[in-house]
Image (tube, rainbow, N blue to C red; front, side, top):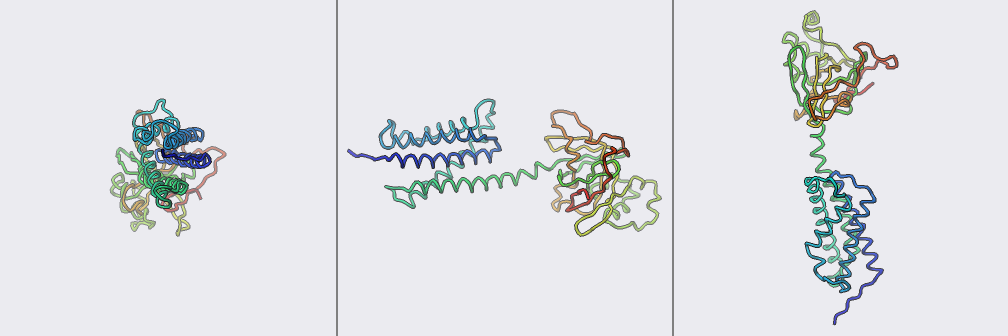
Length: 342
């Protein structure tokens, strides 16, 4: 009769290391799935995984019935689902959210287990694997793979979360542009404090009177129009200069006009306002032309979820030309295509 010896101190150390790995596994799953996970629930889920490990080891030496049943796929899936349920909860969760949890959990579990077994048997022998080395390798694998997976998925998703569509209405004409929500754009009108949207002049040309398009292009490029009489044209009175400074250009003028209305939406939220300026630049805002305008954060701050046709006005609601008494007049500065207060 073959006897197997199980040392309690060895089992305790291995169980604690297994619990640490399960704790990292649940953290990596929550990070990739963008799910909140309080520490106490994370510890409770790791405790379930640790309990399974202890039961497996006891059954492996014959102290519990079942033998090889504890290492079967069905039991592994059962305890894996129990870990997720204890950690993330069951109530009110949609099936699609469970799929979003099971995918990262299964991926990280396979990576951690595969690396642990490979190193444990590589460092030790088939008869005496070095499980501490395996547990440490599994922990390192989870930390690295979670960081890489989060970076890859969010690098692809982040640009989409900041992109949207900007519709500009002016003098009976309407134009829609791809736009980028720029948190660094804090430029505003020094008198009314209305936010300033920066747009490529080539994209806005269809809105402008044909008679002043050449002059507007030259102004947007930072040059005075060759036609010295352009300001006397009746169609040129809509333009107004906004002082700014940029990297490599300590001072300049951003030529703007006030549209009748703008509407910004990104699929999740929307805002409609008449209280803003549209600044024109000749420089491409994105070399791949993914967006042609920069929407300031002050304008998007008043956005509402797109649950219906409701729209809201801009954050500023005082009459034009009448800023509050405690507000000082400020210009704006343009840095890397983003306007910030000077």
